[in-house]
Length: 314
Image (cartoon, rainbow, N blue to C red; front, top):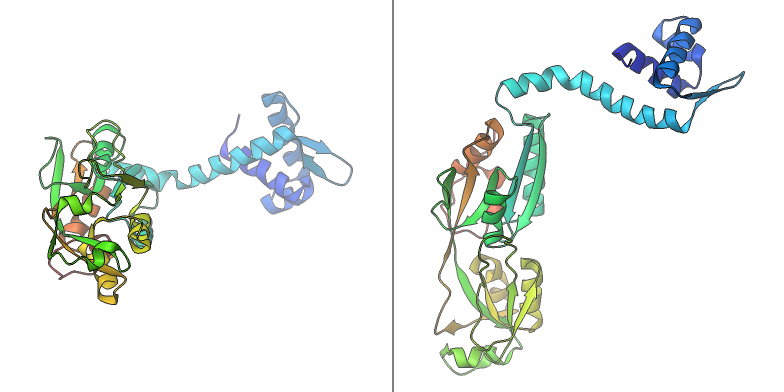
């Protein structure tokens, strides 16, 4: 019913709004074009064009068919290269989850741009999750690779792991916060619990959720992301730990004040993890980029304590 020639003929008539103009561009006779369209309408059982003495226009059914014909034609044109990539082990779909602590919009865009250039027929999806939500997406959702899972050991024998380094934490308060000028050298838990803890809520749905830092009896304020948490610290709303590399410029400028606490937060090891089963060349290429500490993914690692040497993508 809808072979390539019929699809191209239908699209050309719809675009030119004329059997004669479509015939001229396709090097056919108007009668041949008219006959093909009439046969198509008989096959689908409904009128696709409204005909006048001067032009033709699409019916609602014709408009619907045109949208799909364009999609089909694009797919038919791309199909040979797409099939070759599939046989070469290139995935048709790759879903990537990124830890909120590492997520950088520009770095994400740069990575996707490069991946699209290398694998033009692969579809990509990016998700941003918090704490155990990264593991949760990799283990229980349709994600093949995770950037920034917590820990340096895999939670599954079917998942490979590459340690990225640790995130160091610094307890900070706003410059006008009462704790900023407190005379104690080391702040006790009793001093801290008087003020709200600013936390980002764990997005895990299956695995046990974690609380970053919260003292017994302390009020907790939950925010959706790291940028909001930083803003809350800067405004003096509450207290807590921030990645040392994130808050360093604010401490140096005086906008935030770093304080020693009796129970400092230990460094958090983060890793890149990927599924062994079902993964192909795209996932392997991304893992290799991280192994090489490529500048393409350097933005993801800006808050991770790691060797500084990086290599350029080729």
